[in-house]
Amino acid sequence: MPKRIISKSCRIEVVCIGSELLYDRINTDINIISGILGRAGFSISRCVIAGDDRKEIMDAVGSSVERSRITFVTGGLGPTSDDITKESIAELLRRKLIFSEEIWDGICRRFYARGVKNIPEINKKQAYAVEGSEILKNEVGTAPGLLIKEGEKTIVILPGPPVELAPMAEQYVKKLKREKKSSVIKIRRFGISGIPESAVEEEVNPILKNYGAKYTILAHPQMIEILISSDIAPAKLRDFERRLKKRFGDGYLGVNPPSLPEILAGLLKRKKLTAAFAESCTGGLAGKLITDIPGSSDFFRGSFVVYGNILKRRILKVPKTVIKKYGAVSEQTAMHMAKGAKKAGKSEVSLSITGIAGPSGGSEEKPVGLVCIGIGMPKNRFYAYKFLFSGNRERIRERAVYQGFDLLRKHLNEK
Image (cartoon, rainbow, N blue to C red; front, side, top):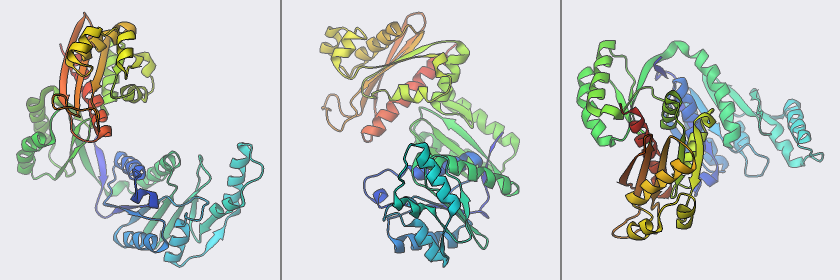
């Protein structure tokens, strides 16, 4: 079934509260909310970050409420003095803060369940709710969420910690999807891997322009997504997909594709093959992403994190002469790592990654971003590839893993 996106009549904005988000912290809240809304067929028009300042919060939330039908507000619901989200929104709406025995009882029960008898008095701050709001239960933490109606506008206040935010946002968005079902239009998402964003744009722009279709291209480390958000004839969609298959070949991932780790997992399951990884610069990230998938124990043996050369030699049996002659970051070492992982993991296929993620460690001959990937296949077939990725340390490691997954996927699809 195609995904669906909410029409412009239901504009959604997000305001993330927290001074730490203006310093050196990554705003994970917007990623969580946009993902949940996107999967349900909704889109976010704007996201704003406001520090822990009453005037800044009031300005940010007030402006968002004026522009949008629904405003999500995250963060600032804790018990400390800098958590002033509820107080600021109550002042903005000219409503009182009212102590809720229901919320306080829930907070007490959570503390008692953890063996805490003397509950800090400061936590009573979390038991206050904005007058006229609906309480949204928090099954993980002590800070409840609030749902506030202001005329035709809705403000959804949720805690900032991801482990609390995600399930609460999921519950509200499910309800929202049911209520707004009649006001959505169709959207289809086409996935392309291993191809630069610019190459995808050059190919699809004249086609979709001719169709008169509105579209967006999103670049992620694991794939390029083409989102078509307007209704076009089924025949044109089929023609568009045919063109994508012809132009991008095995780089085309299909309509509304799952993630690359899920695609790889599905292939291994269907082919009844087991896999083992060997990781150096990625430090276990490939193993983490594949084991995020339920049921991965059916096909995944494990990942050998061989960061230093001594473990490459001792665990994976990479010859000392190979490392000395070609270096730890080389196609030759990557191939031997793939061989070692396959043998030590007693698996049918393997993946190895070795590289220089930076910010230091590079040279003129082997710069930061150089990554070598090895692939092991049945019947003693091994392959090695070399790439030069740009970006910071995190980006390079991420791109290396997804490139490795994509290479293994392509080899598994070979006839």
